[in-house]
Amino acid sequence: MNPKILAVLAAIGLVAVAGGTFLIGWPSSEDGSDSTTTYVTYTDTDDDEEEDDTETWTATETDADTISGFSIVYSSGTEGCYSAVLQSNGEYVITFSGITEDTVYLISGTLNGSIVIDAGDEYDFKLGLDGVTITSSYNVPIRADSAKNFHLAAKSGTQNYVYDKRGEVADSGISASVYSACDMKVKGTGSLTVVSDNNNGIHSKDDLRVRNLTLSVTCVDNALKGNDSVHIKSGNITLYASSGDAIKTDSTDPSSSGVQRGNVVINSSQGDTVLSIYAYCDGIDAAYDAAIEETGGNSVTVTIKTYTGATTKTLNSSSSWGGHPGRSSSWGAGGNDSNTNKTTTISTKGIKADNSIVITGGTVSIDSYDDSLHANSDVMMESTSKYGSGNVTVSGGSVTLSSSDDAIHADGAVSVSGGTVTVKTSYEGIEGASVTVSGGYVSVTSSDDGINSSGSITLSGGYVYVYAGGDGIDSNSTESYKGIIFSGADVVIVSTSGGNSCIDTDRGYTYSGGRVLAICPTGMTQEALNTGSSAKTYKTGSFTAGSCVYASVSGTMQLAVKMPVSISSGFVLYLGSGSASFGSASSVSSMTEVFSGVYVS
Image (cartoon, rainbow, N blue to C red; front, side, top):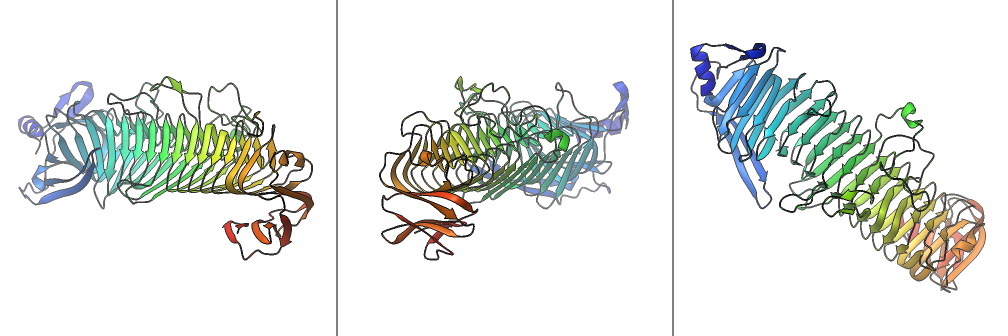
């Protein structure tokens, strides 16, 4: 039992202190026995950077102190390093301090109050949750003012709850239900539910790591915030941010060891990861890079929904919408905010990064009011004193995007080299200073341009399908025959607007390889023919919705598309042969369907 509290009980039992607060001691087990049976066993695989160590947190019943249904159990390290103060508002403040070595305690039961960790800068402090409910209306429910690392772990098979009932906290205060001024690791094989009525959910001033845990955070502002980084390694995590971003980082300077700050990383290095995000603003807002990857032979599933809870009043705001704050100019066709018909004062992107977004694996589904993937190049990085790259890169995984604006927007380069990218709905599908598809599968449905760039668009490998209400593929490059380069990909384009073209460039495009089938209404067909290549065949005609339009070379069907819409006065182009023929059939069963309604030989 805590010797400090024993001394208080033996001497006076109860001591009044300044401000009307009381120092309270509490007895251990109800019957006062000295049982040495195991009270709690907690097995935790530590996520050390260099190796994984399995540690067991144990305690005996004689190590337990209880007060009003709340128990503190000493496990290892500095014993008796805590005190409890009953404040005049009726809440307890339990403080751990005087730590002289790495220390572990376990807590259980119900606490009307808060916990403060003041372990200094030299030692780790680990707090195990063994069926806990902590509620505070006046203080941060769990706050680590100092420690080398603060670990918060939920014991297997337990459900744990943290409720922040405070009003909105001013900028000078700590606006989080769980806060750490040092690196924080939130983990365990149990469950943790964090609810904040007016503030952030879990916030680390430094790095925040989450793994294994079944975690639910419901809050007004940011659900998970690590000023330096947020790294999710495994677990089943659900985040609700009713007025802010779900995951956020702030810093972009390097750490003392040279590690880049500001990253959000979601992988599966410690087990399967399932992440579900519901945010009023951005789903993920990374000050540097945002990365999603499958690692360790485990799976990653990320689902993001933004503008959750939006109202008609917000939608009808008079301010320009969705852009990155501070941008004064735009580029390309439509620039930063392609869909100028949308109005809101907030950023509601799926994943936003001020340097780059990289997806190498996993299953990613985003339904966003603003851009689904958005990388900026107008924010100065402290680490390099240069602006961010603004690049979006997809090399693996399955990415499904729905947006009222751009599905993918990069101020820099968009690169797809593998995996599957499916744009289900968008204003413009993919927009970047340059766009390259060298592999994988890319399917775009858009109400305006399908793929748009202020520079070059290079399709050198993989499969690409564009179904656009505007231009199918549109480059605004001023270099002769360099705006669009077809050099190896199989491409099918259907553009439905007579004021647009299936292939649109200011100064022409280049064809050197691959197969391209492009269909649009007559009207701007000269744009689609502006190439020096003789390996092209075209004709005019009408196309009926549901029929399969195909191009054949030497009697062999090359590409085909089941028409998603009828075009009464149309134009069809095939790149790959100067002597191709066209036809229409109810089906093309001899061909392979690579996208819904798109076929290759």
